[in-house]
Length: 125
Image (cartoon, rainbow, N blue to C red; front, side, top):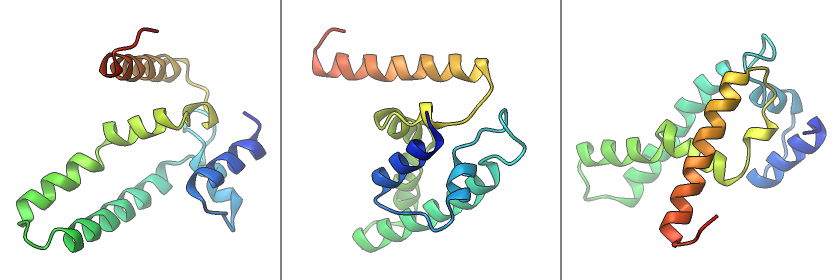
């Protein structure tokens, strides 16, 4: 995907315009493509997402105990859950990468998610 269009597509999806587009470029770069990849941003993003979702759960579930809140948080911000969101929004083609093995694995995951959806809806490919 063209880099400008990839960035614009992510901004439309998030309904947010980045002041520093280089951060978005870094977020869309796998370590197989360049030394500056999304990994450092992922570290901060995971913490921010965890905090934001914890706050949401805490405020919207005043009678739920900490164990159940932790379970809800883990179920909703798991790697697989976020990967499924990425599949739904077709984000993988926007990632700069140079890793055929990753392409294969992600392709298999995408197909399995689509198959699950078809099975759930009772449709055929």
